[in-house]
Length: 263
Image 1 (cartoon, one colour):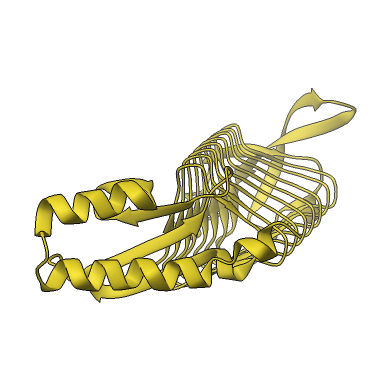
Image 2: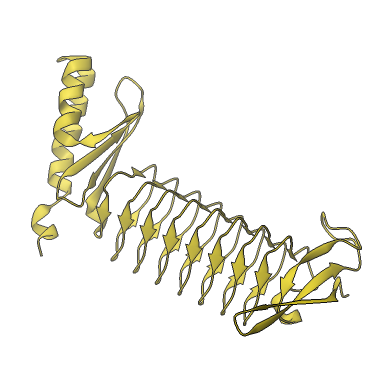
């Protein structure tokens, strides 16, 4: 059963003529008579499920919005992108190429997903983050800030990638990793997560930086390994927590192999 129609209003985007849509029956949170966004043709938006293009969002080319997915705000879906499941794309986000956004994934702000990248599960991509090539974001992962993920990299589990972090090559960042400041990760062994440890009984992440140093994210601390060890000594002296943190640092030195980095 059809759920929307063209209103007759059109606009030009590039060389494409877009049509304003209007709901002609109730479905999901949409009510009959409600104006939607812009699509090039009916194949861009499924008539089944609760999928919807709202506000000033647009879908064109061979892009498709289906199932219960929603795009709204000023989001743009084009080329052969596919938005499905309960996914949401909003803000000024753009999804294009052969990219797929599915599950309960949410894309917003100025995030860009393109090429053959896939974002799924309960993952989130926001701010100015960019995902491309064959990169995969899934599970409960979050990518934000000005982070960039490309090549065959995979971000999964509860991992958080933020700030200006770069993850690429065949790297896999997973678990409870928290990667941010100055990160440059292109091998899986560029990241080590140890936990729950320390007085906070929390997870500590060690990762490779652009200037070939080991960075540490532990609670509110995010700095180079030497600064972390100084902070540990200042806070814990030589107690049991200090011993554990120092042991974790030694494991990180062995894990993040700089011989591999130089190849």
